Image (cartoon, rainbow, N blue to C red; front, side, top):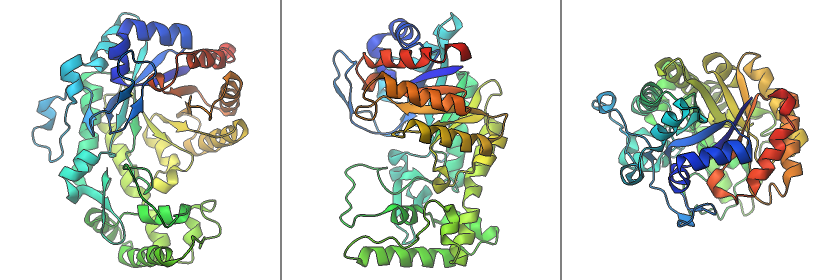
Length: 397
């Protein structure tokens, strides 16, 4: 069974490859390390680090050495983090350790969530119904953004050859909590956030019009709904069956419904092109949550095009996780890999029993692996909780 822990390069640098590998395999009982190969900005409390208790990674950089022969003619190019220059290429170090009997290696790869690149290339980010840019989200309809994500995977899989590559954000992102210091005094509800996340940039417009989709009518409807939400003294739900009904919550607005039915096309086609560009020996999986449709993800297409996915079921009860895994298995099909993603954060996880129950319900529902989040962000003692959860699965792996 695939058992992994998400880890940042600076965690490996702080602990050392041998020490972290021994701790993950021995104390936590996992067989894989999912190391960030590209990542965004943040501020992290780092309890495991002996010296860096607060860490601010560079925004929108990669933690490997890009192959310049692949990038020289690209509009959007990656920036290697200074961390790699100063402290070494940990993806390479882990791959070399794997050859000597170390942990399997998965490259955790953030694709289109990149504020640094969005600021540099504003013509290639998503834009709401008023034309305002979302600098944190390169648009999956943009040819240059697509080329960036495809080449990123070609570079990592071809030159490093990890066992697995996890695609984070190869899709449309939501409006809330994708930047930093976000301000919302209105009190946006779920449908407002969804409407604000819909992209009507020039690339989406051209692609939709080519497919015969009435995108301008959809844009006018969405702009109207957003304007109305901004005028209300208090938030008010307008679509009674959102999000349960999916895009059919908007079935009475024909242009918008048609646009939403089309909206998965840029994401689906991008996933297919990413997989075609990857080295065949590296399994390509999607990282997403149970509501991935909001970002244009079609799980049935994921099951056809990729090797599978890790379904991130954060802050969910065991029974709900089991139901989400069963639903995802039906959508993905029987052949695709299906893993579970869990956080180790308190109070979401307040002891080993709830973690073990979440893992148990997921595996019984059809999960074939578990990823735990995140090595450097939690106290060392929680690795014992991971071990306890893993040991309940001993007959299965």
